[in-house]
Image 1 (cartoon, rainbow, N blue to C red):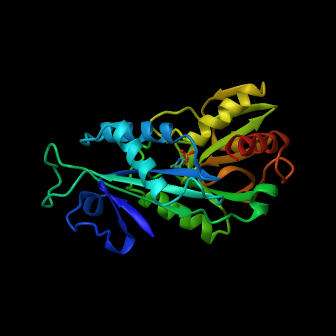
Image 2: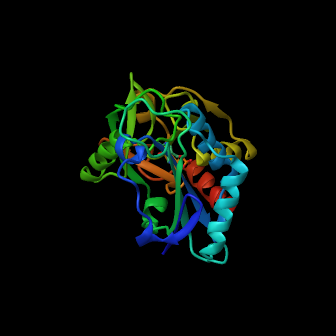
Length: 280
Ligand code: PMP
């Protein structure tokens, strides 16, 4: 049960956060979740690049990416992650730092970095083979969703609503167009074409989203990054979600509307299979 905290690998029970940590008080922090398939981190570099961008956008005093990468490798080696044959994930969080509470931050604060790995809770196999339900909810988040901030209350509340409705995910709608899930990106398939909303400031550009687009393009499917209205989503032949822990997950029902035949579509299943090939 070893975790990493700003340069040290320590026991989890010793890893305390200061009560004036800005991540704790203001949600003034950013994070990444990296999948570790069979001991091998999936696209760590891309995750770290995204972390750096989140930090830059929020004027964090970010350390060098090379240094963070080394700290990650050292930590994963220390906990014997690389030899593991089980799937896990690495959580990395950076807070702006610690200082007396004040909305306007001081310049040049020393960021607090924590990371820990945990075994991935396996999802029921039928989620992937038979598909899941989703509900639609208004997107109540701010307009800088490309920043992977720990300020996740709108996502938390919307995910809980999905759970209460017996669904896997809430798909968020802004001005009549879908943005993304609370912790996933959304794709549709329309007449053989793979479509996902463009990576604007209103969505997080998922590492899995990018991998799936690469795969789909390589397989010769026509791919488009276009706005998808609520009506277009519900009328799609296939719908699926992507994400580090969601992988490629078919959606077969949205708000009581059946998608396609009510079972995972052919192209979704193909992309799911290819994605697993790439990861495992
Ligand atoms: N959108 C949101 C809001 C998310 O939280 C996540 C998961 N971190 C994603 C999309 C998917 O991103 P990724 O594929 O990088 O996990």
